[in-house]
Amino acid sequence: MSIHHKVIGEGFPIVMIHGWTLDHQAMLHAMEPNFENRSGWKRIYIDLPGMGLSEPQPSIKNSDDMLEAVVGLLDELIPDQPFIVCGYSYGGYVARGIVEARHDKICGLMLLAPMIIPDSDKRELPEQVVLKKDPSLLSDLSSEEADAFSSMGVVLGKTEWERFRDDILLPSSQTNAEFVNMIRENGYGFTFELSEKLDYPTLIVTGRQDHVVGYQDAWQLIEYYPRATFAVLDMAGHNVQIEQVDVFNSLVHNWLDKLETEIIVHS
Image 1: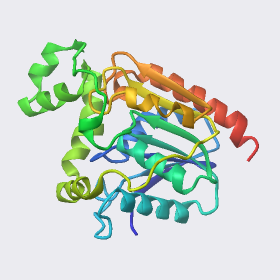
Image 2: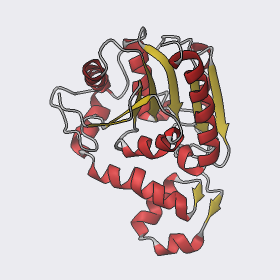
Image 3: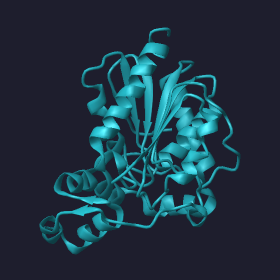
Image 4: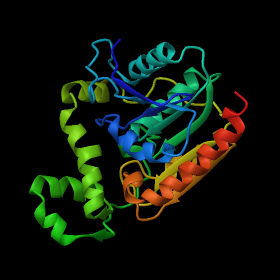
């Protein structure tokens, strides 16, 4: 099965899974700055089927199939190797599915604004709010761009817009809409419970103003991960890694430091 992926660096594998309708660049732009002064890491950025440069697969009808395809790719790329997994939004849901499917191989986990409850009507969500905006920037955008940015963003500035455009808006326009809509209708949630505990360094980063997946539902995960750091960042929506870059990076560095000390050194 051809799933487009990009591998950067050599060493301990860390797998990055983007959000719904996005591509690998969302995770690449968020995570690569944290590896600039680190060696010994093999970063694997995946385009989920039907998104980015990965073609839709006729065999994939629901999220169970999506998970099976990703696990199959990892079994090819890093057979019988321990690895760490990171997931953003829907990618966080898939990441927890990987923990379930390959529990004996996972040595660490990062969940960034993770989707916890597939049914959006059942999520605990804060009200949508914009806390900071640059009016002149918004007036320079097309109405479609301004609407898209304003509907997602909590901080509406120039740097946030450029990241939103490159990481969120453009990839979404290239997604195979028919394919992803079919999955949403046929089985966006897994048919099994996500119940595996993970006793390795875990980082869960949420946005206080995230009106897409929220932050409260993610808190219920804390007992599954005895080694978890859980952060709820103010002035951050669903694109927390774009709106709170410095805090996000410091949390990731702290998590990677623990992994390097505890996992990499002993592997």
